[in-house]
Amino acid sequence: MNRSRRSFCELAGRGLLAAAAAGVGPARAAEVPKLGSVTWQLGWLETVEYAGSYVADANGYYRAQGIDVTIAPGGPSVAVPPLVVAGRALIGNSTISAVAQARTSGAPLKIVATGWQRNPEVFISLASKPIAKPADLIGKRLGIPSDDLVDALGFLHVNNIRDDQVHVVPVQYDPTPLVAGEIDAFFGISTNEPIKLALHGVATHQLAIENFGVPGLFQPYFVREDALTDPATRARLKAFLRAERLGWREALRDPDLGVRLTLQTYGAALGLDPKGQQLESRATNAMFTSTDTQAHGLLWMPAAKIAGTIAALHRAGIAMRANDLFDTSLLAELNAEKASR
Image (cartoon, rainbow, N blue to C red; front, side, top):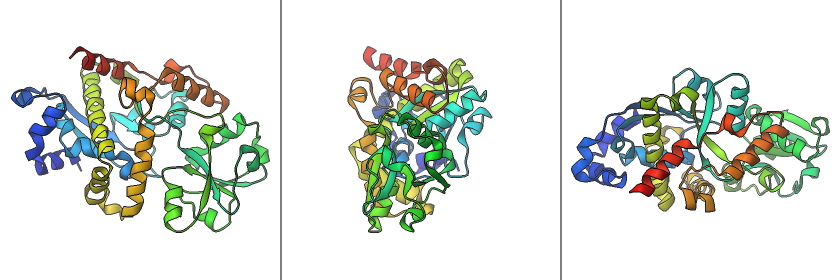
């Protein structure tokens, strides 16, 4: 379903407000060029972690930029990099390691922005049997989803733990095996599984990998490389990122707005827990801001964190240069436009 078309019709009365917020005054709203359509392929289901996109859609920020955006849900069975490579999505979301792996296999992909300024990945253990430091993982049964193996094993290597010193147990994106005692730790993200477990009365301990040698960025926006060299496509990408920044600015200002849009519209069919989405919204929003975003705007990718991410990929066995994987030119141009006003 094309959510932009539906949402725009439903919220037409907010059009002038959206245009003004996007830098297009009421008198100029009709002059916005029609840049075409954009498919935004999410890496996961339509939960509150994409609240800024929902706000950008529902408030008409995409439309005010001249683009018609389709928000396509992802999930555990959706591999996003191939969809972007095949042209089925203009811009996609996945893990940075997944994009890097695709790049090393010949996929011409580039990361052009990142939402989260911190790495949320954690080894989750029960509070009654906490795993407090990397060395505590030795000899343990570690539940790791297949898509997260690169990140998890890379963390072990950074901390001088060999693969044969742990027992990797394949799991889905569900921490139930931890509660059942089938594993000693579950590899997840701090904004999700610990919250779900807490709501079910399960106290946990989190071993944050960013505290032990794996800092970096998360939630990348990535595109096919030739999208950056084609003028028309590049214009659509800039319009999309400009609207995303506006949507996330509003979502950060009003976390409950993102929760309402998730529960009532975008993720309405998922049967999401309202309390869980409310807690996840606030945890997600805390990942979006930093001193770097205060200086350079939301979705920014600071050179130091790019370097840290590249170093972590190297230690995980994925060797590439920063310029092979990251391109900051779109964000830099957006910042230059803002500075010139």
